[in-house]
Length: 152
Image 1 (cartoon, rainbow, N blue to C red):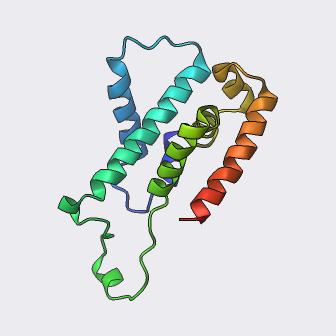
Image 2 (cartoon, one colour; image 1 turned 135 degrees about the vertical axis):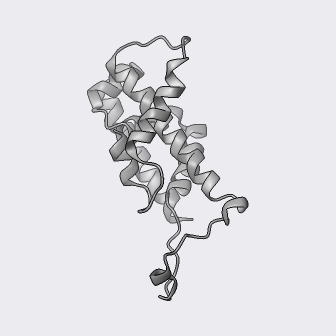
C-alpha cells in the first residue's frame, strides 16, 4: 500500500515507502481510542494516514522556507530549458477535500479504493453499504474528480 502511495510522488522524493510505514505506525501506536472493526477498516485507516502524511510532506516541501514550489535541479537539468511540471498531488487533495464536503461517502470510497487498494466488497463492509453502491459511488466520484482536475 505504501509503494502504491509513493508511485504517485515525484521522482527523487526523499520519503521512502518504509519511512511512510514507520510514520503511520508512530501515529497508530498511541491511538487507543480506535475500535478496529476488521482488516478492511485497519487498511482504510492506514491508507488515510498515508495520504495525510504525504500531503503534509508536500506542503512542507512547498513552503517558502524551502524555496517555495521551485523544483530542485541537478546541474545537468539546470542547463536544459523546459517547463516545470506542477505536482498533481496537491490538486488531487483539494479536489478530494471539495468532494468530501459535498459527498463524504464518495470521498471515502475514492480514498479506500484508489489510495488503499481495497476491493469493492471490503469498502462495502467498512461503509456498511452494498458493493453495487460502492461501484456507483466510485464511477460518479471518478468522473467528478476528472472534471474538477481538468478545470484547474
